[in-house]
Amino acid sequence: MKLVVAGPFGVGKTTFIRTLSEIPTLHTEEAMTETGAPVDDVAGLPGKTTTTVAVDFGRLTLPGELVLYMFGTPGQRRFFPLWQDIARGAIGALVLADTRRLADSFEIMDMVEEQGLPYAVAVNRFPDSPIHPAAVLRSHLDLHPSTPLVLCDARERGSSLDALIALTEHVLHGLPAAPEQP
Image (cartoon, rainbow, N blue to C red):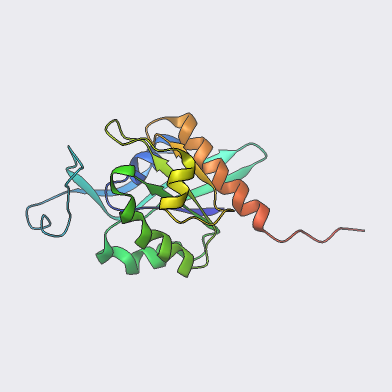
């Protein structure tokens, strides 16, 4: 199953994929430069010195021989055409969000919806992030009642796996039932 890990700039997509991948990840992180400073707003992102410029890739095999191929996308608007190419053929997306910058997630969720991908939202908990009840987050993100919402820490394998499982279950439950064999 091809899954997209999407979200705004600096939300933890690369970390998420590195945490879960059973293989060495492919990542295209580059050092941020002064030239990019006017475009890549690092306000509220202490210590952010690199950015993904193409794709992150990792693989995870779940019980039952279900293999997940995770493709992480850049979060900046200038990479949206690349995002569309990466999303082609995916069966779902995990949108990472950050409570310090929730509004930044709207554009990404719109793109996912425009592609017709089922998705789940994982709110990545940073040490300095405000904590909100799930009902408040769901309301602020204007999520459909069937859209899964989970809290995770992209640095922790267990909570990241829970987020990926929520997405996978959501995608699998939305697939048409296989015809019964006689």
